[in-house]
Amino acid sequence: MPRIAGVSTAAPPNVFEQVEIRQHVLEMFGPIAERLAPVFDNAKIDRRHFAAEFEWFGAPHDFTETNDHYIEETLKLAERVACDLAAKCGIATTDFDAIFFVSTTGLSTPSIDARLFNRIPLNPHIKRIPIWGLGCAAGVGGIARAFDYVKAYPRHRALVVSVELCSLAFQFGDRSKSNVIATALFGDGAAACLVVGDEVEMAGPRVLGSLSTIYPDTLDVMGWRITSEGFRIVLSRDIPSIVTSLVAENIQELLRAHGLPLEAIKHFIAHPGGVKVMEAYQSALRLPKDALRHSYDVLREYGNMSSATVLFVLDRFLKENNPGSGDYGMLMTLGPGFSSELVLVQW
Image (cartoon, rainbow, N blue to C red; front, side):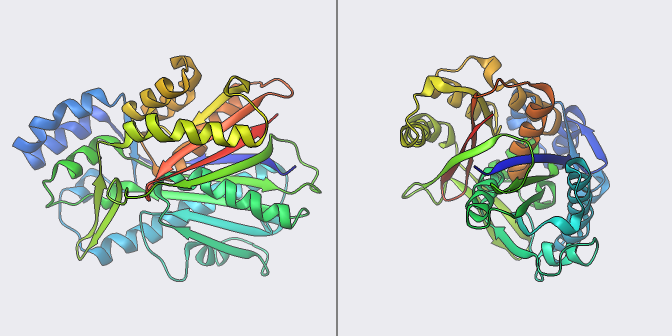
């Protein structure tokens, strides 16, 4: 079976404590922010990394300026995680046969993977698969699509790169509830993951299968409204209830396809979309809080970095845990659509 051979993560250098961010938002937005101030306190986030200094957020920026900044900073982070991953796995960057670049926080044509080709040595025949619009689901979604790819090309190494600069979607003049809540939750980060085919001799958990699900009549649950000023967030309070009512059944569906009961899963690697989403996972899957401790830790230290977040969780899990041979794990994310992405692995 294909394997996950390694993970690398990185974050921008600007680090701010949640209490600092809270104060700045109160000063900028006034009464509406004061009413929503408890969101900052209850998010269980200590600090976040941003692609710009605080001064940048204190003035309006048009879409062109913001997107140019996205491209510049995204390339720096993509280069860093791709090179770090190659070094960690003991290969050259020219050894990647395909690159799946996932992001939903900026736009670029040529795509970021093409721009990356002009910054670091890559195979000139590398297959480029840029994926835009899956949002938070794209971390696991990228692994799932890379899994599909290496099943067809068992000698290949597929690079998955996620870069999300959520902070750059901040709208200076938007005093909506959703925009203020977003300032309490989202951060910036990047990650890379190597998925290899059966005939590549590298260690790592085996990928057994995946399941992608999109739910009808849920387009307004999560996403962007793209305006002349940039991206305006769409965020519904219904997300935890969807986890409880629908996602747990999808997990059971994937497990049934492999003849496994829920109890067989020893390790849950979940995208920490927020505290309420994590609590919904715990309730729906009957999990003790400790089962998602790596997700809570990443949320506390980085906030929600959209698609990159679950790869931070996976990286931490691989560094701090020693799963037993034969242990099963489940990677889980949710995103716009509204949709879920699941990947079943075994050590």
